[in-house]
Picture 1 (spheres, one colour):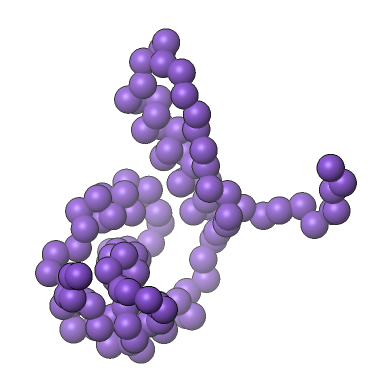
Picture 2: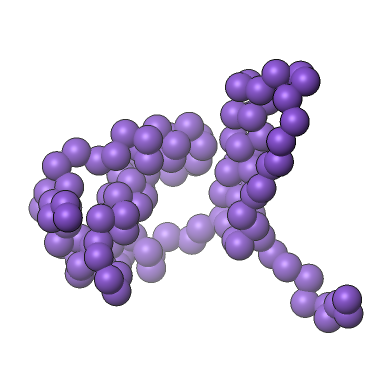
Length: 117
């Protein structure tokens, strides 16, 4: 099992950068570090175990500040994520292709009104 991240996963980095989120480069680097760390951390994940996998000499406290100090606009991020997914499919599929588009809406605001099925 990989014990230390030598280079950030290029696909993770490209995806976060392609979302064009209105955050500074430093914040985007924190996102890339966290996602990359999560992918290689075995078992229970916490900031200490995630940051121990990084080679960029970041301390766990920087991750805590990153997660706790910034206000996140979840709706904007979700909209950008969905827009990016639809754009990718539109650009790579042919007009006569048939398939499914499944979008994880776990961050989307849900109706609290109970629904009976």
